[in-house]
Length: 537
Image 1 (cartoon, one colour):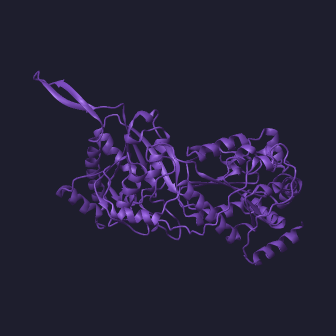
Image 2 (cartoon, rainbow, N blue to C red; image 1 turned 90 degrees about the vertical axis):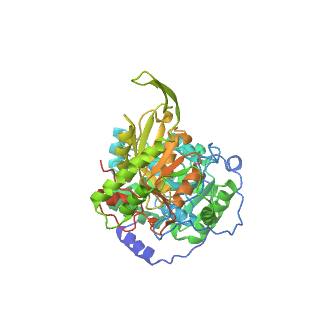
């Protein structure tokens, strides 16, 4: 394909109509070496769904994102034990066929909480120095099954399906190697796994609950690959075409295209095929309902409004002093110095209140007058504070002031702009935290998304649920119900509970963005109270 014909094809692509259709037909069989199981013994026919149900809207939604607001997380059931496995969707197709676009459109249309997008690109093998030289000259075959670490991939996908945390390598296509830092991902209701060889390994194939093949014209795939590799990966046009003709095209014909017959559904033309995506979404919803991994968000919201606040919640008594401090910190005219001063006063009272819920035992001491005094002392191994950055960090001085030699951990959670879900970006926890009573600190909790993610992190580090105390200066009823429903043994302590959350996820009447008022920074107007910046230390 010449450069001129590529430019003609680009123009043709830009003028194509975005029509939609779906095919369930397969293709001819091809050679897959030792990797694929036989069709007759390895696969059973998929049950077709006739469900016409439409996804319920989430409790809160904006044009930009969906925030998880209610419903028990998939990791643990009401008894604190692991619940059912996540639903895994496998997306296969040639290089630049539009798999990632299809995956993101499925995520957007699904409208369910806790979706993880896992790319096969993360699991390329570490190259030797000789292989690095070949890769640099476009002479290494990245489109062969041997280029992937299928053992690590299967292990990671299996753990993720079981709701366990995993560490995923981050592959750098400019250097053809793994970066030093790996990404930590936690369990999900739905896992979408996409890659050119998604169906090419027995162990991985057995973990897939639904298999989708994205079929796209070879000329379109080449043009997309040229765009991507030149603009994003620093390649030149001659090298990309050389690699395509020598490795990519033959590998597609030998290893990838034959796996189309294993797919439950084939999607022609990729992300523009909304008919296919709608059918896929309907089927996934029906499967989640069967597995009880999908919740009616509107019904939960209505139920929460009618329910009293949970018994696991403790609200600081609204004395004239407490009410007066709230009057000051809620006032938009309050100066930053006064805001910090009275916030710190409330934090100290809040931490003192939280400590009263820690277990204690009778302890008799002798006074200077030689008399016995029957007192009490903490009954546990250690107390550890964990702050949800950045606002939760402001509560650490109050905890240190009343707990001598307390250990401190930090968690940074931010919203994924593609999926709208909270993701873990930074984690530093003390060793042996599993035996500790943990005071989890965040200054405001509106929807509860960040707090619930933080609790999940602690549970994954074997902290016992009934040893976690979530403390917050201000919470919305929605956040209280969400955390209590998801984790019924977590104790929740706050100084006040407000009834509403607006479309920007701010607590109403609220306190504004606590972090910005405390640190003196400005945030975009669509930030929520629970979205945080990089650590300030």
